[in-house]
Length: 112
Image (cartoon, rainbow, N blue to C red; front, top):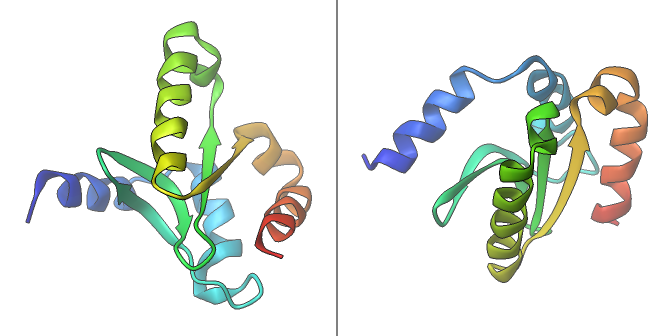
């Protein structure tokens, strides 16, 4: 088993509260019968959620993503993932906490 797989497994076991909350909406094909994977490796990165069928990646960001070093890292990461053929959409932790229905609707837009 390679280190990326081990890290992804570890991340699945230690999901944030926001990731757990969104996963309840994504798991078991509960959004229009699309299958999502959590903590899925793409190249050198592990994305929060991915729908392989629709080539959609969902990232959940906390406040640390507003720091300048992390902004650049996220931009490079998104560019790489998009070069692999995925569309990346991002939601903030507070959107998951306060407007999960709006997040759900936003995801539906990209799936349809």
